[in-house]
Image (cartoon, rainbow, N blue to C red; front, side, top):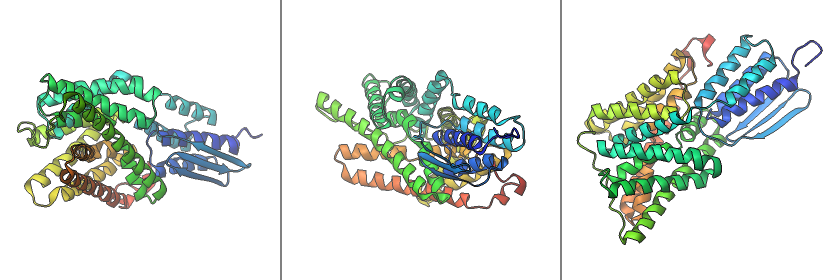
Length: 417
């Protein structure tokens, strides 16, 4: 502390770095990290300071020769922490903390909070079942995905996350989920093996790095954006590798590659009502895994349902194609996310990531990998090209809405959340 009882520049920058650290490791986009760090340090008027934020690190320099370099690997989305740190920064600016130490203590509390394990396991199960229906599975397929998604997340919490690297954990997670689905299919628990597997493995899909990579590109943080998209792509193919290994091993044992279907949607669950309900429930499940605050579960699920409904209406009843339908749906989700961020006073990420998740081409990556293993090169090329078109459509939709001026959504005095 200084002689006047005010915190020194070093103390302010340490607290600022802690806030940025929590944000970055829990799924905040680069622009939000930099904005929050600048907001806190500006309040204390500590003089010149600089923050350089990458996808996995923060460089902080400032007065009194302060310099700090931190390596911050992404641990998994906990958007509840992002919301909480965002609120702390605003409370600091409003003078609600008596001292910097009190704010620092609050940040430490936020860093140690997490969703209960039972809630996470149930979220994975419900999300898997919902997305199995979205991809065309029947109700019995969804039931099998529910059980597999539950057991898969138990594996993630007890084995993969504590003891394995990201690469190995996703390979083994993909293999474990696929093995369970094959076993269930063999005993008659589920009819469409492909849809069962895709639904069950959705909890492993890196939705947060994928969406934040797009947002970083929109904010002209090109290095971070490309790095995060590459990280998401690596996870996609790690999961696909786990699936491939399991299928190859099963073919060696059985003497024939398992028959995998799933491109023909179930007649009952393909109705708009079932699809909308599945998108709503599935997104509720993944809102838990993404660490969305409980009070925002419903808005994020409604955002996803609206986007998925628009996609279905356009892709089924018009001739504009899947890519254009995805683009229109992504525009709507991004627009609703910005509006909800203002109305509910929360970061846009809280609504955008769950809202766009039904459109992330995780299923396309799976089918592409499976076709490659089965030596169906033409089908693999078609599936891969479709996944690429969907990805580009999502990117463009998010970027276009991100470029709209904030004055369209909120008053000038409250532009920043």
